[in-house]
Length: 141
Image (cartoon, rainbow, N blue to C red; front, top):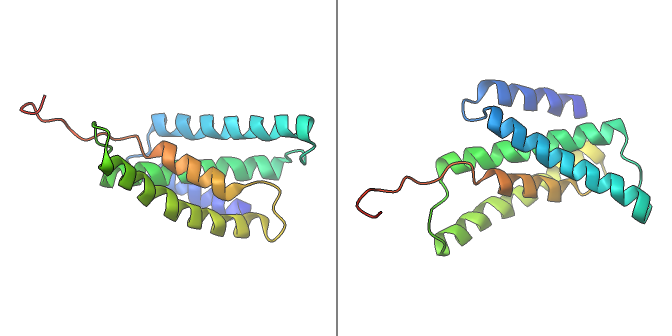
């Protein structure tokens, strides 16, 4: 199942015009941070050591989460001003991405998960959703 999601992720990044090199760098940076987090957790807290399959799953989940965030950001760009719109926008990306992340968790790791894939997916989607900003009109500036 991991290989299938890897192929789907690769196809998504190849054929979606909004997923450029900057987005790939963001997804790999998030994946690297999460892998370091679990590696440090292994040595400090006795968590299971991340196997190559788990590392590949973290990369896939980060890439899919960032892709969801960027596509959401293209549909509803991030406003420049702080306020209620940013709060609603954050809730409308994080809450559904938690549900999608739970589904990914069950598909990738089954009933006995070793990592919190659903939280990784939601974090990646939230961080990816700041990719596009709303245009500021010259009258307002």
